[in-house]
Length: 573
Image (cartoon, rainbow, N blue to C red; front, side, top):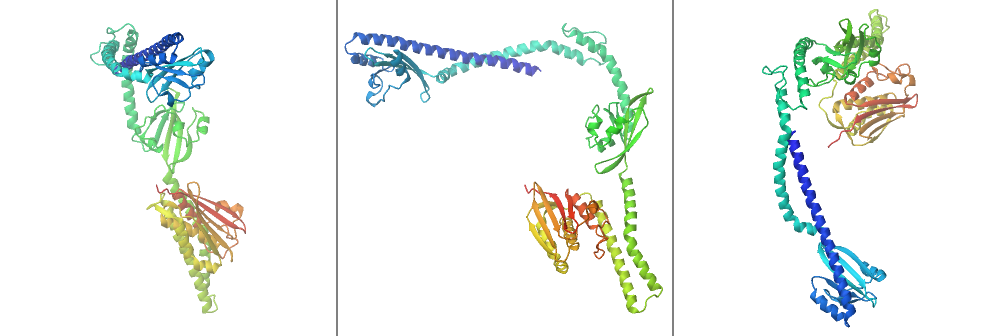
């Protein structure tokens, strides 16, 4: 505050000095302008009177111009604008002066004047002209410094004066600042001792009358505030000790849902820094995941309500219940319990039981049937026994492949983030996969057409190859003899698109939403000869999501399917 007042007073003083000096220079310059015009006017009067009295005007002007050379420039201009006499320059080399503004004005009205600025000379040129009885024009010219040159010439003196006045302002500002802040310093000293052991309670020290009501009020409230602070400190320590030893997130708000207390576990759930002061902030603005409409709609004095919500890829059980004080609702208590692992294990158990039971039923039934035939000796010859044995082996291989894919998908799901990332060009992966599948393409009589741009994405080469392999393999597997597969890689609005379109059997519209589910095969009723576990697109979806990508599907039955995968474009800079 002291520095601000001091600098403000100093700046005001210096600004006043600068303005004064500038105004003074302008006024002096305008005074010099007036003097120059008056000098030209008087000289013009003398010369015109002299010309009328002499018989040889040219000789008179030559004599006068010689005497006034370097002081006033004399120009005698004929009625046609030609220069008849020039005191400072060679008149023969001078141009016609008929178009000069002061000459034009003199021709019309008998007298004229003008002022012109010479930037090269930093001079102001003052002209005054008068028409003579014979129609010729006598023009006088006078040079004076411009405002800028005049200011520059005075600058050393002005700087000296400003320096002296600046030093005076420094001294005056310091003394004035000290006198203004003296009563405030005394008041600040009084307030610093409030609440200290050596303070005089109830007694107001001598201060300025304007500040006395403020000091009296502060002294009156100091004892109450001190007692309140001690009480609140004790309560806060007890609550802190309890909350910090809880594994659940606990948030206490008032009835308008403004935060009163929050423990470290809740701060972590809400992604808030541990040192962030959230007391007094609105909880709905910090914690948007709960159904606040249901929470607000519940009777605040009623029973507790529960909600399940997800945040940061975790699942929480939120319990909301009122807190009472003296039989009145004091606030609302929010308890967050992490049930992610419990729900995950339960979900995995349900999915495993359902999917595995369904998928393993058919091959196990076949194995049981063929093995019963063999064990009962219900075969005619050795060839039948070999046939049943090969079928058992085929179904066992199918079971083994299915189990391996289940394990592979589980490993992918366990990894939430990709590892060993690097810039990957899908163009090379597509070409490699198409080359690898040449024997299958020849056997299925399917042609693959590629339109590939060399654009990078950020990810794991192995996982992205698995995506490309599954998509192209499905496009070939569910195609028809003589069919086509179109693979496109291109960039579009900071994204890289991988598009795989086939001319195969397509997917019914009512089943398209489920094709990314595990073990789901939309063509099972129509293509029993096509092998597959129904896990390929589920694997693709998980890998794409791990790379912050998106996948979509468009299909029309018996016309073909288009799957579009979008990845973020990797920027090399």
